Length: 347
Ligand code: KG4
Ligand code: ZN
Image (tube, rainbow, N blue to C red; front, side, top):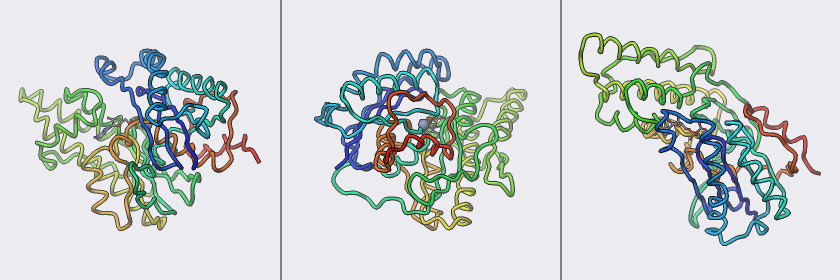
């Protein structure tokens, strides 16, 4: 059995976890800074890195304690190397380097997006559910990324398309701000949409023909235009209807394109990952409409966490990756370029 301890500090969650064989979560701790950043209406980078400095040691200690292990007893330490906020990444990476040195454990730098995808392999308890089958199509939807990724096998990524402007989660966050809902926007829109009619506003479905790319800024502008018209007429904002109509438009495009790509590339399964995969409408629709099994992590492993980094770390550890103690952080790091870190492969 292989146990990986992982550390994740790429954005505003300080997280640590222990995972067995890339799948079974033994412990999982997340210290969220959401309440602190909500005051600013978004993540304040310098505040984020200082919160990581405060939280990283207790969070990692708790993850090890709950797993009844010391750092010297895990097989390797994995840490998010990028993409993410530089100041936030640096805290986790330096902590992980120190811990790897002190406990004489191998260290692996992991791509955060690869981590989100491997979140789909995680489970808790004794019974392992069937893993996603290859080849697979991954729809990666987070605050910073919206990508369609084709995987022929483990650790092999072909990026089919990505967003040309706003990421899906970013669109949720911006529209939430427009509607006077809080941060983070995704959960706030989902909640507001519960009492709304998704057909109340016929917002544009930005499809972009003959490409696997996405675009969400036009949809955001369409919502803005509707809001301005209603306000100019002196009427109260139908927030629930606007939220429901926006959410339906995003789900239509994400589900439609993911299913089309899955069919075109003859995928045997679909993985949906990243913070936006917590969205109930998206989960329900893609699960109901896909002709192949759909794997979506449990809610707590959709948004940022360290268990998913441990899951990806396990695959890389098994493939022989060892990164040493002198690697830099990667604030921008496309998932299809992740193999370049394999230059430090051993044997
Ligand atoms: O993966 P994540 O936690 O952090 C990044 O790596 O970006 O994703 C955060 C994003 C935010 O934009 C947030 O609004 C969105 O995920 N999100 C949701 C939901 N929960 C989180 N979007 C739609 N519906 C949700 N329920
Ligand atoms: Zn993320």
